[in-house]
Every structure is written in C-alpha cells, then in structure tokens.
Length: 312
Length: 325
Image (tube, rainbow over all chains, first blue to last red):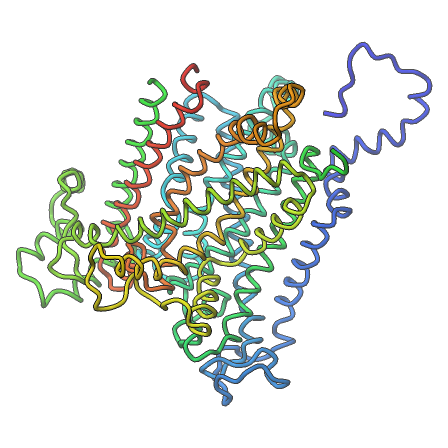
C-alpha cells in the first residue's frame, strides 16, 4: 500500500536524494521484516516471545533436567514441595516437576501441530473460497459456517468417543473442530485482496492457480495468517488439556491435561495436595497468555488504530 | 424477509448435516464401537429392544439408504432410542429432565458476562489509556488464559474446600424436595454461585475486549464529533450514540456463544458434578451409552441452531441495513 504514489506526483531532486531509506522500508514491508521489527520493539511481543522461548527450551531439555520416566511411582507419596521435590509429589509418588516438564512436550507438540494444520486448512479453504468465488465460494462458506455453528466441545467429545484413543486422534479431532474459525477470517481478508490489480495481473500472465493463492495473495495477509496461527495454537493447547482432563485423550501419556486428569482422579483437591494442581494449569495459562500477548502485538503493529494514544 | 429465509435455509442444511454426521459416525468408525456396547448390555434387554437398538446403529441387513431414511424419520418423531445407562428410560426423557439445569447455569453466567463485559468495554474505550483500559484488559486476558476446568477446580478448592463458603457439587442439597419455597430457591442459588462465577471469569475478557475495539472504531465516527459539538452530555453520547452502534458485533457473538451455554458448560459441569446435559454427555460417553450420546449431541446442536435463528430475527430488527440489502 505504501508503495503506491499518487500518479500526478512529480519526483523532485530532494526526494531522489533520499531513496535508500525509502527503499529499505519498502523492502521491509514486502519481506515482512517490518512486522518482525515491529514485534521485536513491542513490549507485549517481547514478553510473550520470552515466555514461549523458555517453555520450548524446558520442553527440549526435559530429559536432561528430569531424567527417567516421569510416570514411575516413587516412595514419597503426596509430599509437599521441598528441596528434594521442588514441586512436591503426587498421591502415587510421582515427581510433579518431572510430570510438568515432560507434559510440556506433548502439550506443545499437539498444540503446535493442531495450530499449523488448522491454519493451513483454514488458509486453503478461505483463500480458495475468495479466489474462485461463485459456487465454490458458496459451498465452502456453507461448510465453514456449519462447522462454526456446531458447538465445538460436544462435537469434540462425540468424535473422541467414537475414534480410537491416542495422540493422533486428539490432533485430528481438534483440527476438525478448530479450522472453521480461521477459514472465515482468512476468507474475508482474501476477498479484499482478490480484487486488487496485482492479482488480476497475475491471472493475465498465466500464473498457476496455487501460485497465485499462496505466493501472491497469502503473503499480503501475512499478519492475519500469523494471528490466526497463534489463535489456533492457543485453542489447540487448551482444547487438548480439556479433552484429556475429561479422560477422552490418551490417559497413559504424560501431558498437562492428563496430569490434571490424574490429579482430579486421585482426589488431589480433597486431600489438599494443591501443589499437584497448580503447575500444569499455570503452565497452560502462561503459554496461552504469552501467545495471546504476541497476538495483540501483531494486531497493534499492523493496525495503527489500536495503538495506545498518548493524547486524545 | 429474504434474509431470514436464506438464514432459515442455512440452518436447515446445518441441521441435516448434523443428523447425517450422527448417522454415519457409529457406522463408519474403526474398532466397531457398537459391538463393544452390545457386549455390555446384551444380558439385560428384551429381544425386541435389542432389535430396535440394532436398527438404530445399523446392525441390520437393510441397505444403508433405507437405514438413513428410517433414522431421519425417527428423529422427526422425537424418537432417539433408549438410554442404556439408565435403561429403560427413553433418551428424550433423560435429556428433558436435565437440560433445565444447563440452561439455568448457562443463561445466568452468559447474561452476567455479556452485560458486565460490554459495560467494562464501553467504559474502557471511552476513557482510553486510563485505569480501566490499561489494567483490566491484560488482567482479564490472563485470567481467560487459564483452562476453564482448572479455574473451576481452583475456585472449588479455595471457596468450597478451604473456606467452605459454597457447596462442593450438585445443583441442590441431596434429599431436598424441589419446590417453589424460598429455602429451595436459595439452596439452588447457593449451588449455582461457584460454577457460574468461573464461567463469567473466563469469558468476560473476550466480551470486554471485543466491545472495546469496536467502540474505539465507533468513537472515531463523524456523528460522535457532531454530538460533542452539539454539547450533549458525555454519558448520553457514550451510551446512546457510540455504544448503541458498537453493540452490533456483540449481538452476533452472543448468538455464537449460545453454543457455549448448552455445550461448553460441559467442563464446568463435570468439575462441579452439576447435573446438566454436558455432564450427562460425558457420562454417556464413558458408559458406552451411544444412543444417549447421540441424542444429547443432536439436542445441543438443535438448540444452538434455533437460538442463532432467533438472534438473526433480532438482528434484522436492530440493523436496518440488513433489511435493505
């Protein structure tokens, strides 16, 4: 947008004298470097990225920090946090810190997998819908709206009930219930880009359809795709935890959701073992909060109207 | 009118899609869930009941299309089969005995969250950058980041177990006869506080932020400047000029979140063992009671579709642009 100049404008020598800066900013806009630069100077984004980075680091290092199988039962049962077990132990004697660390691997992996796949399907459906228009648009929009309207959690439960349990099922089920929201948002954005001249030019030059969809249209809505992705990851992590808390996931695996499922099943609340409940829930909240912060930052960087005004 | 007819058509298609999904799910799933269910109940049923169940789940020799037509016919007659876990109660009466609690919990928390959230959003946008605008949004987003069920558990632990202010589970004290007396209503209200509070806490942030953002866009409109120039009182501009126009997206999301009312309270109901339809859905899944699972899913979907259609009708009344285009 900033590239276009009003046609009648004459280029004065003065303007000619300062092209490097202008050129760089244009280049930054095109390659999305403007967005990244904006994010790195935004407090909310930095805060979110730091937390996210810490969690990924801890998840990767889990085998080093807490070696051994975290589900193995230990001798200390329902022990409060101490120097030996920093976060205490469960009613079965498992170390809560080990469970939380190892749990982050499954939770992050499922969350990111769901986010990426759901966003990809959302992009595919949304952009195709906007690009082809007419009957294809009607049908795809109908499909999207139906999936948006069917209440997610009950559908999740019903699907999980009929599919064989396991991490793949969890991902599939969450993608089925999660893609529609992003498809709708991406479609309306793609529609406005579809009408731009450069898309018409690409069609006339005979570019392949998928190239126009993913290399012409999609890069121009990078910020929306990005915030959709973040939203989908938040959804994936939260919904996985919910599903597993209900006992509909893979209860033998270790994730934040199953940790809470077992805590609840072993009556951690009734016996007052609050330390079993806090870490996994707090971890989910922190990662969701971090992602939400990055999301708001993306919004703020790309939508100047939302930037906090210093003066009215 | 054309708009409403189009919407009605859409809801009918959505309803049909749900019935179809319901029909094909148990028939096409690997691992044969239906046989597992039969193995569990075979001994306690009469032959004709088993035959009816077989028909419901497609274990007959009829061709698939005929099963499909039979299934749709049954649905429209309100016949959703017999619950296995509460044998021999029909699915429809299990659902009707429990949907009231879900509606009570869902409606209470939704209305509180919408009214409070929108009010906070209006005020935050009106006083950009002031206390309300800078403290509440991040705080509520943070609270909203917690998983529903976790917040519910935390509230249950803190207010129920440690402090003992509120009852731990169920919708009313065991053994109390339902009646319209003050003590019964007070008892129900007392049991409602914690579950409703957790739902409000988690959902209010979304309402506030949504309202705040549309409200900010609205306050930049010319007619607000005009209203100011006329010297109208600030409160009047805020509510009658800005908020009134910024409400529209909130109404749409109100329709959307009705799905949460009937279906999403599932987690909260599970934590508090609240006898609603969501809790029953989970129980039915764990007890391999597929007729009940399907019946509840269909009921929830129907309720959501109907509620959304209602919101559409209201929307047409509120936004004249929809009527014209």
